[in-house]
Every structure is written in C-alpha cells, then in structure tokens.
Length: 395
Ligand SMILES: Cc1ncc(COP(=O)(O)O)c(C=O)c1O
Image 1 (tube, rainbow, N blue to C red):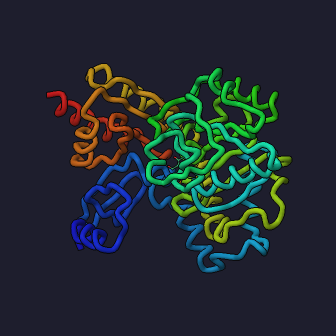
Image 2 (cartoon, helix red, strand yellow):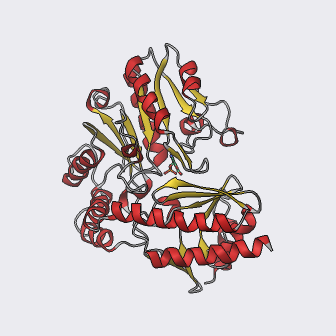
Image 3 (cartoon, rainbow, N blue to C red):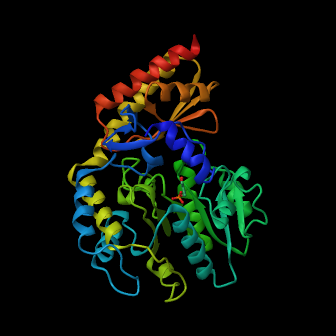
C-alpha cells in the first residue's frame, strides 16, 4: 500500500475533519518516522505534542507489553493499583496538595474542570473567564471556553457562562469579574494561539486576585505539561500554585489519557455519581504514564529540555538575524514559535518536502515542539533544513 492508496480509502470512509498531509505514517522511533513507502522524516511536532518522549519510547513500550498481558481495563467502580500509583506520582510532581480525576483527552479534562468549578460555585457562581486567543478543545464546553470565534462558528448556541479577556491584560480581567464569576482559566503558553507566553507579573497578579476574590485559578497544561517547557508543568516557571490543572497529550506516551488535578477542598466538591469516565485511568494507560514519568526522571529530561530548548532557540535566533522574513522567535523550553512576516504556508510545505515535520498555526507561526529527549544532532539537522527552506523562500 502507498500513501495515496490510504488517502483514497479515507476519502470514502473517514470523516473529513482534518487538513491532512499526503503522508501515511507506519513506523516511528524517537524523533524519526517512516511512511508506508519507507521515506524517513524528522518529526519536530510529534503527534501535536503527544509523543513527548518521541515515538515508541522503550520504557513505555515495555510497560505496555507487560501490562497488556495482565489486565487492560477495569471499571472505575473497582480500585486499580496502577491508577493509585499514577495519582500519587502526579500529586508529587505537580506539588499540588490535591487529588486527580482520570479521563481520556485534553477536552475531557477541561470539561471535568468546568464541572468541578461549577460544583464549587454551588449554583451561585458559575462564570469562567478565559483568555482571548486561547484554545481549550473541541467539545461544546471547550469551544465556549476557547477565546477564538472561528472554533464556535456553526455550533451555536454556545454554552453560556464563558467570558474572554485579553491575554496578559490584568485590568481587563479585573473588569470582567463579577459576583457570578467562579474561575479564571488560561494556558500560560498559548499553543494553538501561536506560542504566546504569559507575563510573570500578569500571572502573579492573577493569583493574588483569585485569592482575594475566592476565584479558582485553572491552568490548562494539556500542551505545556509533562516536561515540555523544562519544568514538569509551565506554572512551575511562575512561582505560583494553581487551584486546578488539566493534563493530557504527552502524559501516557501516546496512549489516550487526560487528567484533572484539583486542590483537596475543591476536589472534594465532587461526590460519587457527579462525574465519571468509563475508560479513565485504566491499568494500561496508567502503566504507560508511569513509564513516561520514570523515563523523564531517570534520563534527566527536564534538564535536557532546558538545554536543548536554549540551543534550539539560539539557532533559530541566528536564522532570524540572517532572514528578515523571521519576525520573532519565542517560547519556553521545547515549546517554540517562529513568527514569519509572510509565506508561512510556503515555508511549512517546503519543510515537509525536505522531510521535516513541524506545525503552522494562524498561517504565520511555525510551531516547533520536538520530543524532549531530542539531541543536538537532530536539532542541527532540523536547523539545516530550515536554513535551506528560508534561503529558497527569500530568493
Ligand atoms: C491547551 C490545549 N487544551 C486542550 C486541548 C484539547 O486536547 P484534546 O485534543 O486532547 O481534546 C488542546 C489540544 O491541542 C490544547 O492544546
């Protein structure tokens, strides 16, 4: 079978909800992937941030192989020692004195956070303020929370209770709060929004306001969590502790897992029967997630992310100094955006042609998020391709 044969089958049998590249990936190892025709690609946007340890990380593979023979799924009406272990481990690395709820995706983790916030508000307070240009997922609740009109169009009526304030504008957030507000929610690095980094002062002030007004501070760590920024979670760069966080993407090394973590007094607003997720925290995904955390710890990958992030950024800044078409290089750790003045799609397509996989958001921001165990050699290879691409587009 060839790439185009797969595309033909998709056109007849799979819903047309994604813009797809003409590529059918069949194998992956670390930062490299191969298509059905044995072409090799360098993957600097593995699974939209899911494959945080690259493809098929050995420890995760061995954990999955081992667990799949024992038991794959159990009902959440029974205890499961692997969910207990991953819950305890997450509380340790988040440094939030609280509890976890397990589900299967970022959107589901965020929906869980919305429900918990409303439960905390006891029917009196229910409004959640989110940021303009944010992205929180595709369910009806999540598109209401997302601060971008394009995701809401055609799906009206929009779930009520979500208001948007400009990112990094503390006065605007203050003005949006009223007596019915229960929470403020944000990504500290807007991913889909174009790698926009929250200001330290803004975040610290937001924490203070939430404390003073008894509002919950919810941080969406779906894309920025699990070591992506050089800390376990992005809020750990800001010296604050959120009340609720949501995690997904990289947490189980490619298996679907979502988690919402809340401080005890908030978490305890959920009583049996108020929320559930059939697949959430199964033994198989929990074991995979334990493998991810173990790998990040043993291989010192937070350090690698900081070092490789700095290195990648410095190489990209060198390119910026060479090509005026590059407007800005920004991000934290290995969550990097390169904003170009023009020709974003052309650059993205040329990278693809030269077998470098990255992402393009908002038409002019190249999103580069390699696996956190990426090597200097792999970064050099990617930079070399980018250099050739920029040379071609500015000709
Ligand atoms: C910050 C953020 N929140 C939520 C989501 C939604 O996650 P999922 O696609 O797993 O539902 C995403 C997905 O890209 C995201 O980047």
